[in-house]
Length: 394
Image 1 (cartoon, rainbow, N blue to C red):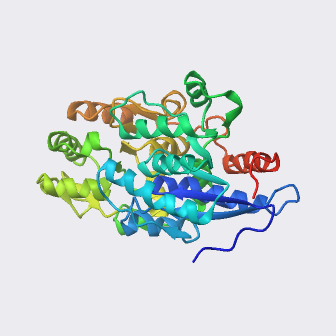
Image 2 (cartoon, rainbow, N blue to C red):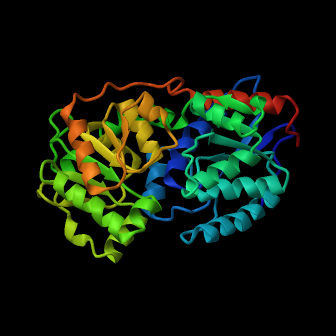
Image 3 (cartoon, helix red, strand yellow):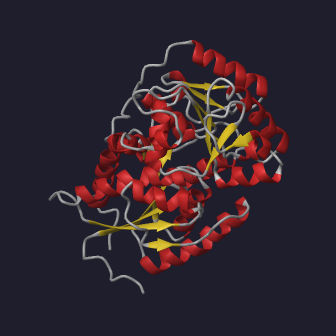
């Protein structure tokens, strides 16, 4: 049943999420807008949370909502898996129905997944204002599906929130008017800082027999999900060979994304893996972890190997050496000011990168400009100003 229309003068906002990183970005924003509504200067917002279901695995979604203290989604589209075209088309179709039913004034999309681009397109086709959180990031590699999603979303968004100054320069070079760009910092880090203390109470180290936070056994933490790494048998095999060599020196902990797990099975790579974190020469394969358990593991890792953009950012704040198994990154600030290094996906390059990273002292945790836990508050203030300026009316 449709909800009643929002009270006269209020602004109806739909937040669209579809994949694990989206949840970490939406959680602080929902809270900041709700808290802002308590002030007399706030125009009044009614917020709806729509989950596309692009990540359909329970551990990849429901557990994250619990750990982030996110409210249950108001609407779940149940999109599920499929090709890029199929996922995008299904989000367009299903989300359009929601937009027609709920008549929002504003749609907020986050990140760079298929749901982000499809949600922005659906909203703009109906002349609904779109705000993009994490705008302007560029890898300059159009073979990456995420780069296509970023560029399309930014091209049609009305309000663009950036994590660093280079992202703003990227947008301006593409013709985006400066008044539409707002440098607010990184909402992903808002979540990290807000939940770091809770994550410290996780017992995941004990469960894996890796000691405790005070005396943890040195270990490497791995995440992989990008098609360039996991959709080709020879590439994924080469990465597994490197990880198996690393595991002779320290445990290698690998919580597997569902896509990666399917391909490990399909390519016959299970011989590289074990369930025992202390079995030298084998990679410890885990089911996807909740946000708090993963944050605890990441905080105490000797090194992180990943192809995830968000983990590059988190490792920078945590001061954990990070090797990105890609040839490029849309987050160069994590190299310039953080702990990140690009090593690609070749076996020898990965091993060389690990050796160099572990030979030095653990990096000092650094916070790039405005990565201070207050990014969502800045976004909420911009949206309040936008609404009171009379741009959104009911």
